[in-house]
Structures are given as C-alpha cells and as structure tokens.
Image (cartoon, rainbow over all chains, first blue to last red; front, side):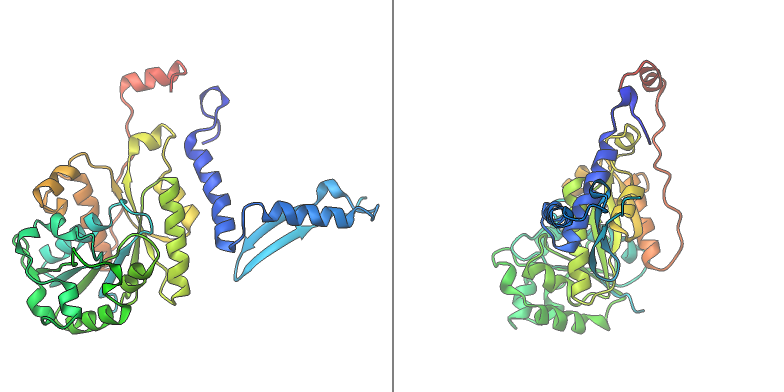
Length: 77
Length: 265
C-alpha cells in the first residue's frame, strides 16, 4: 500500500477509493453532486452567523440502518 | 438442509455466473450429492455448453412452465457426473416467459428429489433476475475484481435485501494474482471490504478455463486446474466445511524484482 514508485498511486488504490465513494451515493440513492449542493446551500444559510467556522463545515453520507446526511458545523473558537 | 436452493447471480454479465454454476453443481454431484442445475437465463442458454450437454436437450424450462411436459421429462442427465441433472433454459423465448411463481413451483417439485438445486440467474436486475432469486435459500453474488462488476454486485445485493432475501455471499472470480501484486487489480480483501459481504470463494484467473469450456468439461473435474480447485473448495464451503482459501500470492521472478528495484513498473 501507500506510495507506488515515483509517488504515483497504484490503480488498485484509486479503484478502491472511487468505488467506496460511488457506492455511498448508490446505496443512498443520491445523485453524486447532491452532497455538494446540500453543502453549498447550508454554507449560504450559515453566512450570516459570524461565529460559525464556514471552512470547517463537513458533510458526509452514512449508511447504518438508514441513509443519513451528517453535517458538522464547527463554531469559531 | 436449509440451504438447498442456491441462486448464482451478479448484475453484470460476463463475470462467470454460468461457469461457476456448472462447476459448483458438478463438484457437489461428484461428491455423491444429487444435484440439479437450472438455467434461468431464458433466451441466452449457456449452462448446457458449460456441462457439454447441448446436444441432449429435448424439452426446456419454458415447456415445463407452459405445461407441455412434466419437469422430470425436461431434465437432462449429465453424461460425466452421476447424480447431476440440467434443466435447460429455452433459447427462443425471452426472459418474461417464466414468472417468479413458475420457477417457485418448479423448484418445489424438485426440492424433495434433490440435495441441491442451483439456479443460474440472467445478468441484469430486471424480471429475469427477480425470478431467479425468488425461490433461493442462498444467493451467491459473483464479482470480478473490477469497477463495474463490483458496483453491479452491490446493486444486486441491495435488491436482494429489498426482496427480503438473506444477504448474498460473495465469490470473487478471475482474480489475477500477478496484477494484484503489480497494484493493478483489487485484491479479494479489497472487494470484501467494499461490498461488506461474506466471502465464499476466490477463483483465480485460469488460462485453461476457455479450453475446459470449449470441450464442455467442467474444470472441477480436473485436479490440475487451479480454478477447478478453488471451485471445489467453494463446494466444500457450501457443505458447511471450513476450508482455507488458496494461497494466491504472486511470487515475483528475479527479473521482476530487479526491474522494481530500478524503479520500473
């Protein structure tokens, strides 16, 4: 694992990453750009609150019992 | 035995469903179990070729479903392996010629007469796939270690879940240890991690497979076939035995090591 000669990632690692991502969306039944759009909408809505650290907002799809979009909104310290 | 009816499916076509179905059925029949292999790929009949039985077919599964003949009459007795029978698909009809309830009723008629009933599912996720999966106690999903096949296997897994079926077990087919060693192919372990399914077998790429199929002789009947050996092991696992996975690690030759040392691929 790790780095392949000349710092290039092996195609196997790339395949694994791509599959893990695409299956997340497939399983959730979401189009691949849905998360980006949700994130942008939330960032827009949060703009007016100065105590929120917009750069730190993270968004994720999880697949436990049901599909969930989890959003973490950090507060500026 | 609860896991008597076993459906082999994959989503994507061409990953080796029929080859695996034919070989697993042969492997278990060769061990003395009474086995029937049902080709549910209506219109694209192929399991007969894997078993070398294409010249012996008189009736097919659609005749049975239409009531033209009883199921016993349509069964083709295998010429090599005792206790093995094929229920062939129709070649001229299409996938909608058999409904789920037709296959369920055929399987029910065979259930008491056989130890194992294999169903070779068509590719795809449409009606034909649903028909093939409906009577199954156990579902085996075949995936090659490549992107499209893995994605489709995941889709099929989701559909099985939605149908209230038990979680499929995974067979990774056509693994090339050399490509894995070069970093150009996903390892079985990666596929398991991505799909999150129980691994039932890893079948390595076997350059002789085409010639076994050319001759209509299942690879499991040949000691020297590595894929045949892997498939016999899958058969053992279906019987509930714990069999270690074959060591498929690729041993690099001297020149390959040297090449790597100098930064070649």
